[in-house]
Structures are given as C-alpha cells and as structure tokens.
Image (cartoon, rainbow, N blue to C red; front, side):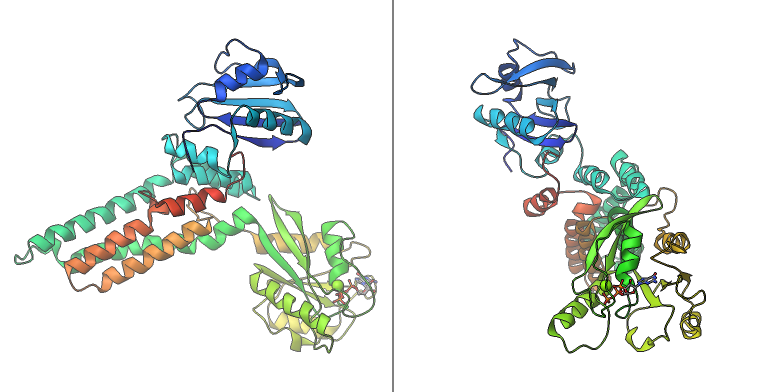
Length: 441
Ligand SMILES: Nc1nc2c(ncn2[C@@H]2O[C@H](COP(=O)(O)OP(=O)(O)OP(=O)(O)O)[C@@H](O)[C@H]2O)c(=O)[nH]1
Ligand SMILES: [Mg+2]
C-alpha cells in the first residue's frame, strides 16, 4: 500500500452515506467540491457539493480534520451525504476525477498505524468491533482497543527479548559458571511464557464464538422435521418442507438472535443410506456441516421409534423432539436414547410453536461463552496462527542444548509472535491483516 497519495472510500450507506478521504489532496479537493475558500477544522460545514462538471450532486455536510488530529494522522475530510448508493457514488467519482483514488480494504486503518495513531492490534480491535456478532464480543473489542489488554502481551514480549539477550550474554561467558544464566534456568522462564501463549491459543475457540457467533447444525434422519423446525426458529419459510423423505439436499443457513448475540442455524439433508447420488451429495455436506458446527442439535421425530444408528458423530449438545402437536409424549425409545447420553431436550412443534421457547433457552445455555473479568480472548485466525507458530519455536527452545540454538529459537518465536505481542510485522503479513478489513475502514 502506498502512503503518500490520497485515498477515499464509501464508509457507510444507509439513510445517510458517509464518504471519507485522507491524504494531501483531501483538503483542497474538499474546498473545490464545496466552492469554499477555506474550511475550519473540526467544524460541521453545511455545503452544496459540486461534481467535476460543476453540477450540484448533493446538499450535505462535511468535516475537515487537519493532520495530525485525524483518524489516519493525515488531512482527512468526511462527507455526510443523503443516503443511497448514487449520491455516494457521485461523490466518489468526483473525488477520483480530482486525482484521489479508491482506498483498498483497511487502508485507512493501515495509514493510522503507519502514522502512529494506533498499533495493529488496536486497528484489528476496531475491525472486530465493527464485525462482532455479540455484545460481549463488542466489550472484548473495546477492551483491546483501549489498550488495557496489551500490557500483558507487551510484558510477555519484553520477557522473551530479555531471555534472548541473556542467552546471548551467556554465549560470551560460556566458560564461566553463572547460575542465573544457566540454560536450565532460562528454559524454566520460557516454560512459563509458553504456558501463557498456550492459554491464549486455547482462548481462540471462545473468542471466535463471541466474534462470529455460534454455528448450530440441525441434524437428523429424513422427515424428522428439521426444515420445519428451522423455519420456525428463523421465523420465515426459508427451507422447503414436504412429507417426502430426502427433501433437503443443500444446507440452508440463517442468522438468529440468541441472547445478546447472533448465531447461525443450518438446516441439513437428512442422514440415511441412500442410492441417490444427489441425496448422497447432500448427506456428505451434512457431515461437513457437523464437522464445522459448534453445537449439533439432534432433531428427532417424537412420534417414531428412534433409529440411533445414524447418530455416529461427536456428542450433541441438545435435542429437539418434534411433532408435539401429533403426540403429547415422545416415543419411549427417544427419551431412553437421550437420557442414556445425558442430552437435554425440548419437545417442540413447528406447527404450533409449542416448546420452541424452552428449546431456545437450552440453546442459549449451550452456546454461552464464559469470559473472566477483563480476560483476553483471541478472536482472529491470524492471532491464533501467530500464537501457534510462536509456541512451536518456544517448544524447540525448551529442547535446545546450546545457548546458540536457544537464542535463535527465541528470536524466531519473537518474530512469529509479533502480530500478537507487538513488534515488527513483515509487510506481507501486514497486507494480509489489513486486506481482511472492510473498505472505508
Ligand atoms: N404435525 C406436524 N408435522 C410436522 C412437524 N414438523 C414437521 N412436520 C411434517 O413432517 C414432514 C417432514 O418435515 P420436514 O421439515 O420436511 O422434515 P426434514 O427433516 O427437513 O426432512 P428431509 O429434508 O427430508 O430430511 C412434513 O410433512 C412436515 O409437515 C410438526 O411439528 N408437526
Ligand atoms: Mg428438510
């Protein structure tokens, strides 16, 4: 990414559109577009905006942020326009006609980092805040943004740097017996840090659930009532329902509100041995969905004897026993099956809605993510990768039998952990991090 030209992007479209521009041309172009002699910084200007042919394209608002007091640290102008795509597109076209280019995803945040307005970890926290699917995820992102969680990470990095430096000193004093520099002592300190990195890596599953929401798969035999139940849960007739077994071939997913967050519910093809290639493709897909799910909901027809042979996958969190309107008490084989496996269940009817509230409270309990006060959870795959790569180097350092090897492993660990603990991040990784951000951020 270049950092010396001027960039612009549509940052929001809705009832209002927001376009932002940042860089050396931002101010002069804003003056031209608004026919203004000058613009007072940090003041909301009501202006008519003119395109490159001098035609008014909107009557809107504009704020100029003079560098370095802006999000990016550069001259920045934000345009608050009437909503709708056309007005925002007109604004972008005019900016481009004046020599400003369309920003790449995450480029504003990238510039903010380059100009020392925030570090990469905080920029990622903003992206998390924008994308989070739960209230607790937003709280976590705000804690990361405030910097309160980085003290711990920076301490880990400082300790690693200190240990690497001590190992290098020890190389020079290899012929003298200095107890505090013994390889064993240094390795003990590494073990403590390794434990912290391990705990961080393990926090990813909870962090991902907070950030992305839970993935819930509805699974069962054909005709169990999965699609009907799915429609009842999402509140619309999205999945096709019929009394013909094997109706659902392709999985359908939708988001639902669950507690103070959202979750993705997926309807799947019924599991059975089938001679139809098409149905088998759907069944293969069901197994894939099961593999990726956080919670598997067994959907079992309460009016029939259970065929437990198909439930050959990881333990399920909860079950929905369907068709309560047809039979007030589930078939005893169903209850026996669930009790033996300690699977909590709700007896529901997709037709009358009975039992769905009970099911939702079970689901909410099963999907709850606990987080200690101020606890840091990893939410980004890039942070998990960094932790895992760092862990591998630290584990090698524990097995090193010379100071040289130990110091070299530590240096590699420090480099791998940079996206998480801070430090110099290679350009290729930086570009990957920011390319995952949305445009205009
Ligand atoms: N009375 C009653 N019938 C239901 C209920 N849920 C589903 N059914 C009926 O059961 C049949 C199968 O329902 P689906 O929702 O298509 O079942 P499915 O599990 O998605 O089936 P496949 O897609 O074939 O795997 C349909 O005739 C539904 O109307 C219910 O709660 N009450
Ligand atoms: Mg179905």
